[in-house]
Image (spheres, rainbow, N blue to C red):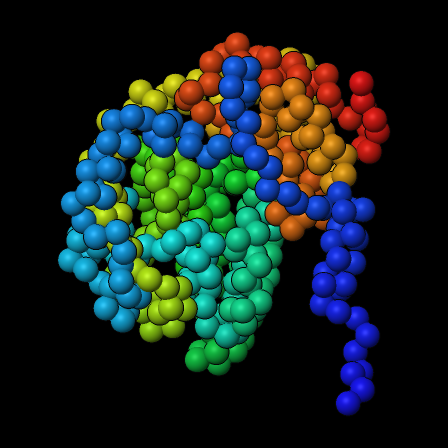
Length: 397
């Protein structure tokens, strides 16, 4: 027969990539740089646990003593006693009733959206929520009403409008809004106004979804995050094991009874292999270690302030209230080119572009770690200033 289509899949993909390349959006998995003089501002391992020899020995013992695979999904038979113990201990440490583990924060976001949000549910995400959450919003079939980044006044107007609507509809049609935010925003480095957020929650009774992937381990009492510092601020917390906690995977901290909903409807629990016993043993060891990392948390805060001061002294515009600092650029191509110039000089950082951040709001993101010495941070700030675009898209020296 005569084939009707004229464009191959490879050709379509090549054309799509060419368009993104011209827009400065092409991505490439760069090989890591190591050696003297390299300043790594990419790594999420801000407390230095992943490089800690003692922590590595602990994990090696866990791997030697326990099975390396969960063998089945959590629902289909992978629910081992050790994994249940780790889930209970994680929930207790971070102040929640229940906990469920996932292979990544990306999976955890998807699980919450498809497992806990019902069609038509009013869902109010901060406009700067990470792409790992916002990419799934359509799958929830919720009534999505985003609010301006960190703008509690805008959020209040959204909530008041919903409350007014609910007052004039049938009681059975009145649905509790779900409000989504990060506590430490992963791209901008800004902190959520926790007192204002909690006050709105008390006034309007929304269901609070708080992403603490970049907070847990580094912020809050004994690394418990900002929700623990402000009791009553959130119903559900998303946490990452692969950032400040120096491990791998993610988890959801949930109210009592909510795990059952995930086990019924959340595809990542239904269709992914469960937490391996060896990994569960590592989680238990990690929870024992976290309270003793106060010195590292203080050092991290001190070095983050120092680096922010260095960047400001170099005349750069900087956003960020903790160990994540952002330098706004705007143009994606200029942002990628700036990051490339820095890489040539041994400074590694993230050129965050669409869809990681909104169109036209590209930025360089730096993550400070306890392993950075002050001289390296000062040198990195100077190099950032010397290589910065003179204006969006302009060539630099």
